Image (cartoon, rainbow over all chains, first blue to last red; front, top):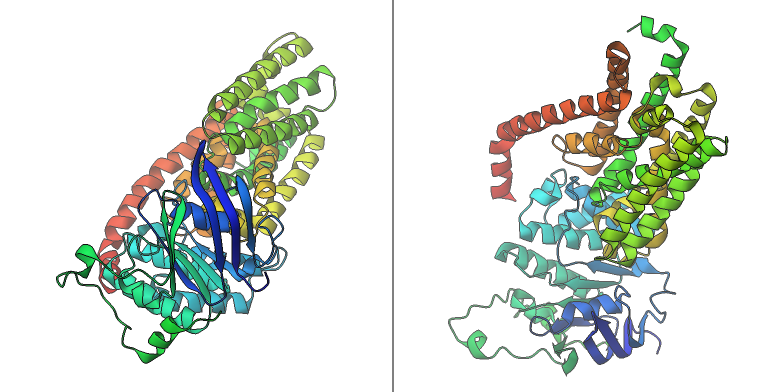
Length: 257
Length: 281
């Protein structure tokens, strides 16, 4: 099938002798803003990591822009945002250094960073509102700010598709709002977003499609499920910054297929 | 200090000190970031077997060490990547085997342990001019690898999955780090000794990161500390007739302690600023 960003057919992933994902058929079209939802341990993160070829498949097949991950070469089209910033052995790295490493798929090994690289890094830092922290060590930032650093790293690579693992987990409300603003800009540009979320919060109005996993199987694929239970109670305050904004409302109802 | 330079072996040793002071912390920054601080140790143990081979077959111990330690580094990297749990014991076996093999082969070749001591803890006078040229070539190769592959290695050490999802050749780069570390071990082994060689990869980096905010600045400060420690340790070794390895390492440790204190002082002074940034950020 041409044109799809990610295509998984009959996908199965086994980790430590246990099926984590079973019979997954998933096609992500350009412009989709797809939320992968489900309880803890349902295989959400494994699914998006399998889409990128980061975990091996026990059965089935997965493709990125029509190629298997092993044969895929056009990695600059994909930006992966992991769940958290790894501090590693404790060697510090500035916010700017981390964000600049997102350019790597666009850089040539023997050429130093270009003016275009630096400009893209500047734009990415500004987009997540961290330009003034560029020279600070990334590990000293708050959790929400670190999350924004990781998103900026993916933004710096100017990919067509973003894959984000729980970008809202443990993130303060200011950072969540900043993330929602960034995401609405990306979707307005027609970029594809696949994100794992425990709860959508302020991202909800931007999501065009939701896949719900339960014990490794897809139990829902379609419109984002309406909040129910405690979430639907009047006391539960969801923040919907753009819900009545005609532009984002149009995007939310836009179906590119 | 000046009269030291009258001795030819001392001039050779000082050039060597500068080379290893630059290269060991440069690759060490990646190794520490990847939590492989003991990789250098492992390679050092394995390299001893190579030295033993070189001595026994009366070929170059340096060449033997390069080949065997590079093979050992590849083995360590493969074990590390393959298994998260069983790798630990496999690595230990490799270390013990390398050390024992080296000691046996060296003893067979010389009949006594005097040559061994020089390889274990370093020796100033043991470096010939011929060795120096080989080491110079190796050092240039290590620095070139750091410059050319630096960006990729940084991302690899930061987050291996993101590196893979950016299309980087992760397996190749992992082997590159291991083999480069092996070459660095050989560069430094004559002057600092195989048992302490990894200290020069780790301690300057540990000292530098007390004072720095970024990766590149950590590497550069670590290289400066590496050169300073190697030269000062070597001079100290000459002045007080102690083996150069421990002398260099003790000097680096002193810098580390000073850096920890300096870092505490710096952060205490910088704290009001940090707080302000936290509020606005």
